[in-house]
Image (cartoon, rainbow, N blue to C red):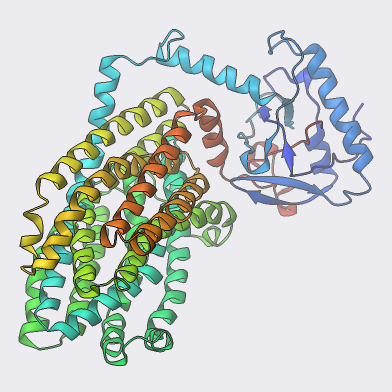
Length: 627
């Protein structure tokens, strides 16, 4: 009946859920649309859309009428005759965006016939979710109960701890390394300290925050690929991100090289800026090293491997002190020596990491040789990397803006110094919720990739509860140390007074910061960085910033008003994050994970026509849903 039917027109805007059945399945209820189209060269090319391509017919305008007819012919036999679907009342087909399309491997049916066919079965997404939930309950033995047992909760706590503890230890080691650099920088003099601080702030805004944010975009791809047992996608994502971040580093390097001209244009002190420019020039190797370390670290963490990075970071930090002493104190390289020491230490981390991985064979289960394929298919990568970068930068840049605002207060010297102490303090505290955030991102991604939405939900709930306890502990610590903490950094009475007043407010900020940081990890693991970016934008810049400026400058609260603005931003951000996490449809997220990790989904080239169907590439068909 379909021998004379032209290719079915495809529109990528809205699609229904499509499953691919083997020839052994209920093939009589499907049609051989794709097989006919492929044989007659109706499909000119396939373009990747977040892991799944769509097929565009060569003469799609001419075939619009045939498309509607084809969809009608596909739907009618399935609706009337399929015995695999349960009898249920008519429901409207639910549409999902095209980037969520899925595909399955073409069946190997060489045993049954000399030429196999691809059969298409349309299934509403709501029904698919019900089937997935039914299978999930059968596999997990929950008997319809979504409440997890105590043993499952304890097991999840252990899994999160095993991931978060090494990450936190690595963060503390890196924090101590930055303290060593600041120690040598402070002993060079006030001008060098100011220049180094200015250069570090410029590097954070234009370099490190951007690289860190872009790299986080690969977390859902890697963790979900590992959970769904797709090692090729895991390795391919690593290769793509190494290329992507290396190219980004080249663009950032031009900004760093022109730092002097940029900052002098904004009326910064030329002498301080000139020294800061020297610091950045010797930090350029560190920028390119980070473009390699970030992807490797996430590649390992997605597989639950954290020990190599901790070990490499510890060894590099041990040598960081003597390298600084040699370059700064012995050879008098000044700020250039401090920057070079940081670059050498980070390069040592990279070399140690690569050698350890290769020597131990950690890469073997998932490794694929780099190929030209890593230069294609960047669209899904950018869709995750861009909002992840925005989310991180919005939060990082807030603290830099706070320092700038301190310079506009009545006593700028004491205010800036006190703000520096408090930011160092909150950076130390941030190590713990950020480690838990990275851990829960990996756990959620793994479970969604493995199509276990209930376990992903459990991981998110446990992590949020632990983060609440973290926030309470941090708040208690900050309040208890309000009169003592600043004495470790300064003896100036005004600095001590401002710090002691603001520390309890900082503790209140952690009550919101810890849960919202972990909430960001949950959204990242479920491939929803755009939501996190929108929440951060609204909370920090539409709520927090007006409150900070209003209290700090217009209501006479001063320095504490800036921290009250941060407190309002953190509370708003935490409430929004918890609402998003609490209202998550985990079954839908599991289905999205299966669609996101659809790899090798491209239509065979014309040169593949001489191959048997069982050797063809994966194919994903998308059919427009009824309005």
